[in-house]
Amino acid sequence: MWDSERAVCLYEQKSSDVTVSSDTDDSPRGFTAAVILPLDQGLLCVTVDHQFLFYSLVVHLEEKFKLMLSKRLVGYNEEILDMRFLGEEEKFLAVATNLEQVQVYDLESMSCSYVLAGHTEIVLCLDTCVSSSGRPLLVTGSKDNSVRLWNSESINCIGVGMGHMGGVGAVAFSKKWKNFFVSGSSDRTIKVWSIDGISDDADQPINLKAKAVVAAHDKDINSLAIAPNDTLVCSGSQDRTACVWRLPDLVSVVVLKGHKRGIWSVEFSPVDQCVITASGDKTIKMWAIANGSCLKTFEGHTSSVLRASFLTRGTQFVSCGADGLVKLWTVKTNECIATYDQHEDKVWALAIGRKTEMFATGGGDAVVNLWYDSTASDKAEAFRKEEEGVLRGQELENAVLDADYNKAIQIAFELHRPHKLFELFAELCRKDGGNQIETALRALGKEEIHLLFEYIREWNTKPKFCHVAQYVLFGVFNIFPPTEILEIRGIGELLEGLIPYSQRHFSRIDRLVRSTFLLDYTLHGMSVIEPDTNATEMNDADNKLLVEKGDQEQELTSEMLKEKALSKKRKPNKSKDTSRKKVKGAAYTSLAPIPLKV
Image 1 (cartoon, helix red, strand yellow):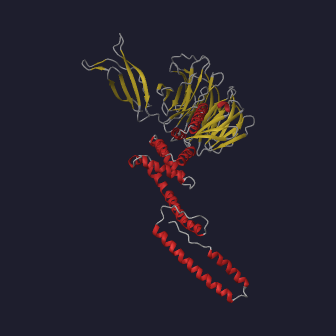
Image 2 (cartoon, rainbow, N blue to C red; image 1 turned 30 degrees about the vertical axis):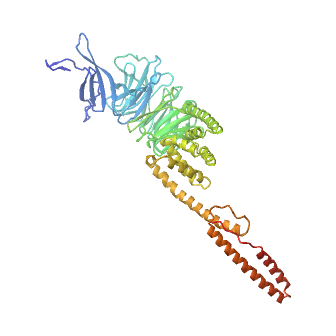
Image 3 (cartoon, helix red, strand yellow; image 1 turned 180 degrees about the vertical axis):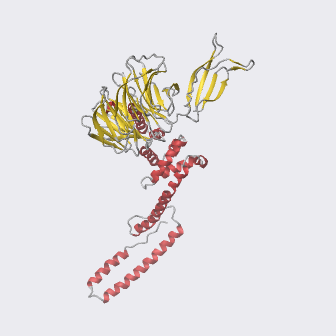
């Protein structure tokens, strides 16, 4: 910071908060912009890797100015390689993001609290623990062939381990005694590092010593896991095998063979004598430590499985892979009970919260997702909704008993009960409650009208329910103007579904009405029903015409009967035929003209 009037430097930062890349990097990172914020809010600096650093201006007596880093916002994480929860309460998340530094996020605000800088190459892996003195420790493995031990409270590197001939791709802390950690490298060796006697408050990092070394595999080592009792360590490699070693001298116990591709992740069960391995052959296998036999195989991922870790005391485990999917499995039934698709690229990192039962995932899409177990809250919410539904259902029944149809219709809409709603409208149709239907429909909002149109469309598809549907539809079109109906979302599609069935119903009714005319005529002709003499619709002229025609028919019938009687006298020998004709003649004589109703 400079005084523009005197051209004097007022403050110079001794050490940068931005890690500069190695000399071999063609694009070293640093600041790209710095802006003094108004109203004495401090200084805002922007870095090449999309970080925003907020500095607050502090004035001292002996020094005029001093800048203190108050907040760090990370705009882009690059590819996330590994992550772990940090601290006793697991309120922080340490993330390795394809950089030389480790970023530690506060889970409440998801802002970057601080950065651990010291490696000269990309950090490939990390692990965390809480020391015997209660301080959170963190170990990192890097592409610079070294491991570093950090005290996350003082944000200091307290130990450096050199000796690997390749990048360190896997590290794991002791689970029980917290006095050592194990590292695996692309040089195919496993080393055990002791951290006994290292002060957590050391200002300068000390050189760590390896207690044991073993050439473990034929190819790169991808993952390490230490048993809960610190007696065994398991390693997974690209040579398609996983090996179990006895600590602390790294004596081989068993070799797990069966995968067809390299193994990306291994982990011990917290309750059983078994190990799970995740492989590039799209499967997860569970192995018995005693004899190295494969107990179970879990299939479901469509690409390489990159991480797998146990949950809920070993009864379940979660896996993530190159297909961007996160899957939850039940060990007992071998079933995948849930699949989550929240990533757009490979999911490289998986961190499990041992106390909170939370877990975090991150991958090539530079996104960190936090997951928590919502089973209990979902059950409580479902119970609350069920209880509320029972109460509202009782209110609905009370409203029906009180004949308060307006309230009953409103509650039926809230509870999404189309069958009950149909019964209410059908009851109003039988009672001809046009005013009540109008009052109930006027109280509906646009969303409820849209829902009503959906229900009407379903009712209208069945001849048994169509009359109620048409009755309610008639009421809707009578009450609401077309401009309001057209504003309803998706009304065009709903009306298209109503039109063909309505046309079919009206055609069927028209055919039925026309058929009733023929039926009435037939029944009148058969003297089954009496003519309606009081019908006001009968035309007098037509009635007279029908009566005259009836008289003429009667006279014609009587003449025919006389001729037939004469013919009978001429042929007395055909008794059977004569008897039949007499019967028919009697029927004709009893026929009377019937006025038709038109």
